[in-house]
Amino acid sequence: MFIFAFGAMVAYMVIIGDTLTAVFSLVADEGSLLLERNFVIILCAVTIMLPLSLFRDMSSLSSTSLLSISADILLVIIVVFKVTFFDNSSTEVHTAATEYDHPKGMSVDPWSFSHGAFMEAFGAMCFAFVCHHSSFLVYSSLRNPTPARWNLTTHISIGTALFLCCLLSIAGYAEFQMDTQANVLNNFDQKDIAANICRLLLALTMFFTYPMEFFVCRHAWLSTVNEGQEITPLRHVVVSTAIFLASLVIGVAVKDLGIVLELTGGFSATFLGFILPASCYLRLEPGKMSELATWQSPNKVGALVLLIFGIVAMISSTTLTLIKASQG
Image (cartoon, rainbow, N blue to C red; front, side, top):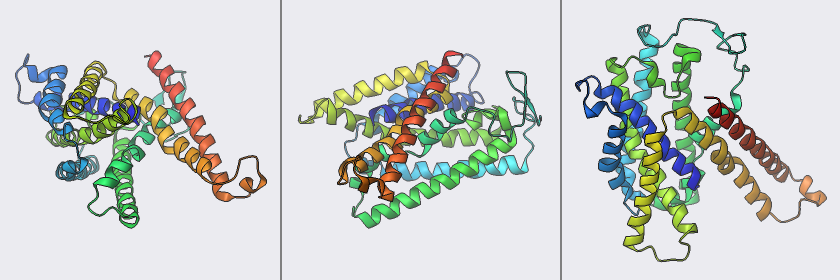
């Protein structure tokens, strides 16, 4: 839980550095601090993200969460509308080719998804949809936390996220194909007005999503390192500040969003999404794995398959991402 939430916090820092510097380039003079990626990240983190992260109850973020979701929806609508009805040939990246040169000398069809990098991408997809780590905190923040309301909340949330994610990714890839960057907004020209509106919306989303991951990160730390100890105001502030500074330092140092998403997703998201739930189910259900009745239970067999799949996905995705990172 700590690793996943911390990786998400770092990713949000990277996104803010990518997006706001592009927006500020329209209004700031050359040499301005607003064009310095590190300064922009530190300024936004200290003045906006840290104060929101110091709250002790996640329900305090309900209003900012609504703003974040609204910004996400508007961003998707603008990008889809732009790539569907407008010519983006003036962007800085190449988008016209139908075939691309592979490093090994092969010609690759951009719509043939078997050409590789699937497992690294799988890690990024896990990063996008795994929310198990915050489930308990979100459940306890509900006004009337019942299983029925929780079931409705999760299905609506994940269903909406899946729809928006597919809509944005398909539209973006159809336009830029194998030149599509981890942050698709980076594919648009820095002076594009619509793209800059989207960059501002994305930054707004990051401002208000960072504290939610921060809550999980701090909760995981206090539940393990400070287990059984009273969470005094001083301890709350000290732990919060330490976690914040660590994420800020790494967020400033790292510039490749793709690596952050793939590594965090491949290692911790697969563990949270596949390995841990399957392990808990197998451990809590009566009977041993060596018993015949276990292998006659579809639920237990399904949990075992999920466990094995999660282990293979975690090892392969993490290894491939580390190899890619080492090769530059």
